[in-house]
Amino acid sequence: MDYNKAPIEHSPFDWQRTVHQDMKVKDWIVPQWQSEKKDWNVVLLGAPLSRSSISVSGASEFPNAFRQSWEKFSTYYIDEDIDIRELTVADIGNVKMHVTDILRCHQHIEDAMESVAETYPNALKVTIGGDHSVTAATIRGLKKVMPEKKIGILQLDTHLDLRSTDDHGPTNGTPIRQLIEGRVIEGKHVYNIGLHGFYNAPSLIEAANDYEVHRIRLKELRQKGIEQTIQDILSVLMEQVDFIYVTVDMDVLDISYAPGVPASTPGGMRSDELFESLYEGGKCDGIGAIDFVCIDPTKDNSVEATVKTTTYAFLTFLASFYQHRVKRY
Image (cartoon, rainbow, N blue to C red; front, side):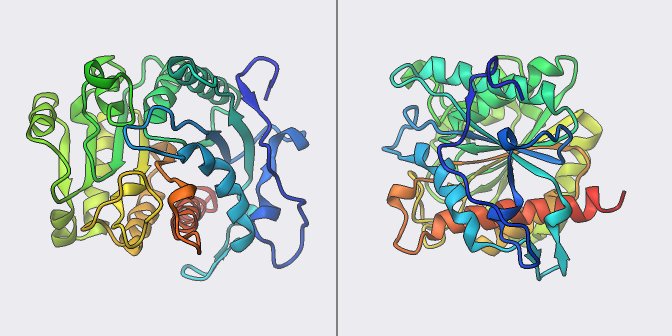
């Protein structure tokens, strides 16, 4: 990774790594700037931006809180009796952010992901937000590297994120609309899972209808079953697009499971439902990138429930990715 060209800086926090039998995640994930290795299964990029959040948010603090949580997790996944330490994962660092200019921050994210995608074309790209506005910039960066490819989105979210930028600019409530109106993606290639309750205005439902965005309400997910729902969606997307991007807004979870999100709501997913969704998604060969957004460590509870749940979700996806897409070869 050429840190002189890309708007990326080394993470301000990294662990003293030790290789041993009972490895923790902190010992496993490698700071890329400390390695000569160039071929990774997974590359990880922090996007510490929260100034574009509609709600008051400290999501910019999450990339480092995420890294600090690694000491609490092992590489061994008892549910599937696998150790994922053979998966090679590089921490690329954080996108450089401007103090006051949100549009410049978005451009930096776009440029950073473009550079990452060019440097590591075969790696799974993981972006750690940051608020949900980072998703639009990340996908624009990916699109620059593969302009002819169609991108589909699997969105786990309580909200549609189809607000107009005319109201408040490119906020965390606008990424899907930005991408559709910018002709980066088509609305019919977006599947939103987890909608529930009283959190999406009629104008947003109208926009979803106009753009042909697919909506799977939480109650429908539960009625049909998570495994079947995810399989069906990804099967359709595999036929329609060339590249699938998964975006996980952690406010999809019920407030009791994720108190540390800016737009926390009752009535959402349980954490085990999110983990099952991501484990099923990790099996899909068409998924090339994923992000985790809208986690605010400053609003989390004393045991860091939201931070830990997000790290668990990240590891669950990687465990499935390793088991079904890397280990089989």
